[in-house]
Every structure is written in structure tokens, then in C-alpha cells.
Image (cartoon, one colour):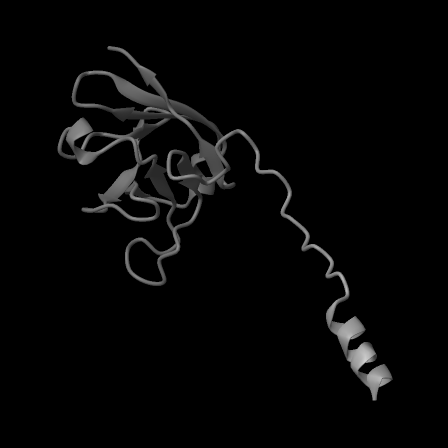
Length: 141
């Protein structure tokens, strides 16, 4: 009988392996954080005017108050925004739906988004057909 109790005691008193810890997180802001802006060649819309068109998502540090009502956003000096989302989504960010698929803008797209104070946000989109994360540069008037 004692051997049986000894076996049970040994079974429950074995050292348990410590769990594996996740690797250290990077020091920089991870890609697709709410502070990053995103060029998406095609929106996730399933139907309607947005379906098949690109979308520009502006980082959450910019609010509607920073812009004129509906500023003329340009890609290579041509108007590119079809519709602005009235609120915030996807990480509390503003959405600007483009008037065509991102690939139709080509490569090396100079994107300019005017701000109310006369300055503007500027970014270079390397390839309109690919999703790109970017932090636009704020350029003074």
C-alpha cells in the first residue's frame, strides 16, 4: 500500500516545465499600427461604388478638424478621391475612397493631402497596385 501512495506522490511532485515565453517585441511601432497611413489598391467593400476601388487610410493623429471640408487630394496632380468616410474606422483613422483601383495610378505616385492650415501631407507611393504602409511627411506652405 505504501508503494502505491509513494508512486502517486512522485507523480504529482514532478517538476513542471516552465512555459515558453514569446520573443521580445520590437522597439519600433509595428506595421499597420493606428499611427501609420495605408494605401490599399482595393477596398474591402463588397458592393456599391467603393467595390474594386482603392482606399487611402490616414493615420489616427490626423482628425477631420485638420482638413478643409473635402480637400482636393491628388495623385500625380490629378484628383483621386471619390468619397470620404464621414467617421473614423480601422484604428480610429480617416478613410478616403479612391475613384479607381490603385493599380490604375501606376508607380511612383506623389500623393498630396492638403491641410486646413495651408500645409499638406505628402508621400510617395512606390507601386499603386500594392498595399503600402507609410508615414506622410507634413510640408509647410
